[in-house]
Image (cartoon, rainbow, N blue to C red; front, side):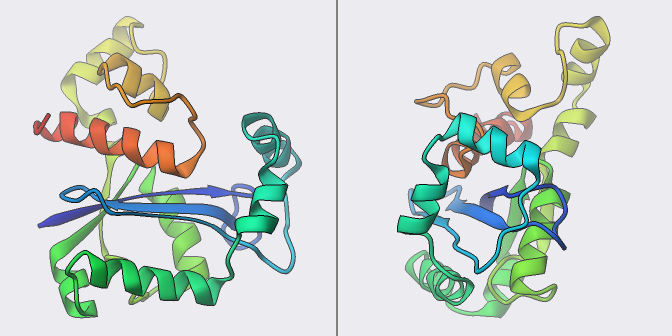
Length: 190
């Protein structure tokens, strides 16, 4: 089984109303990564989310305008990504690759909305690292004792002593690298 770590950054919390602005995928058994900003004809920004993204990356709107691709280009890039990683058809993608994300329901809601529910571009099997963290006995005990403040990705990563170069949480490329390390630690492959 191969694992595809995925993260999205969005304009808000509602996949029917808001949009993906950044998406990153990485196969855990490969260094290959796909990292794209998405451009849309109209944006429904949640005011909190826009302010947050501008704080994290002040030039976010410029980056999206300059580097952003449309959905058809995203689909082409996803197809090329899978071919480059040796996954040659939809059946192989569905049977042999697991979609791994931190709070997978959130990311899957957005990817399903933009690519379609039965997308041929992403794995159909899903593994939620947030759920793994919440089910982990050590982390549950730490939360109960107050040594783990919450189950946010950055908090769990810090508790598990995950080290990834940089500290740009809420950039999907960085979050994918951190999620991968948290996943491997919780899975016992670190």
